Length: 388
Ligand SMILES: [Zn+2]
View 1 (cartoon, helix red, strand yellow):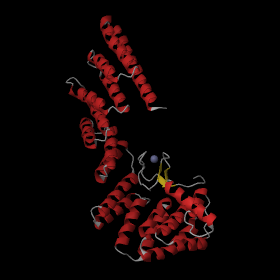
View 2 (tube, helix red, strand yellow; view 1 turned 60 degrees about the vertical axis):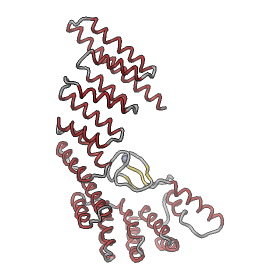
View 3 (cartoon, rainbow, N blue to C red; view 1 turned 90 degrees about the vertical axis):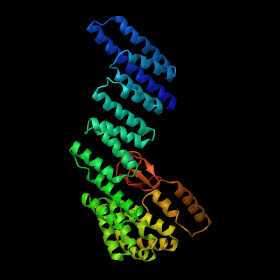
View 4 (cartoon, protein in one colour; view 1 turned 180 degrees about the vertical axis):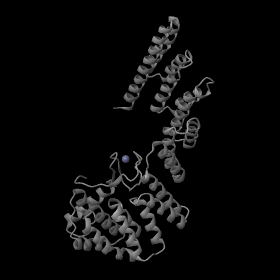
């Protein structure tokens, strides 16, 4: 469906909603014995407004709808529907004006004020003005401290802004209101804070503390083990300490364990020492993703000859077409035909997306701990299966 058709349908839906609303009010007023002339005064601009909406003249439609709303002081629903319509069709400025005008009305009820602050927050949020959106959600929470939509929207902004501790505070409030615990989510926020402490602030002690807290909350938080491994490697810890930590990760969260390999593959001593461990893991689970990522990391580190040796030693044969192609892209020897195929596989390899969210299905090139589409934590995994 084209965007224009989508917007036209949206406009039509709002027009029907408004017609229903005014008709409903009219019926009530007739019951109350109100003068029929007052109803006609409302119906006429409404019909003109619908006509303008259908002929795609949004400015004129808005003027008529405002007229409808003026004729009744309790027409907040009309304004809210209009604001929603403009936001959905990308006209953020208009949506903001409608909601600001609502908030400026002296007769607005407390619930109307709450809804208007939340809607204005969504306008700013959609427009990328995150600070202003947060302020509006805060106003809404000032009116109703357990307003879940405002808390969830604020959490999303803190996560987008990589402010992990304020995000964790919001998540705790949401947990209390819902009466359910989100240990993995909280652990993921601590793991991100641990990574930030290490990479941005260069504070290894704080990073270690947050990584430990993450694993204390949920022992399957792979991202936290990766921070611990980074810290051990930075300290040039003995290989055994790194192997022990990796083994825990392998036991607790097998589908993300391969993500640890890039952290040590650039260190000659660790790279060689890890061979026995990774071969053992391969024999333990025949995890194709672990093997392929390991081989690709070796290839990228300039150890193409080791790739061939490990494939022979492990008797690795991919079970998926995707796996066959990834392995082919690492081949360096062979006749002209083999080389041509390998070259084509390398071109394919640069375009393919390795990871997929098992919640919403979005595909991404790089591993992420939070899905960019559905915002779930830990839902992105390496692509498996027979397809490409
Ligand atoms: Zn997703």
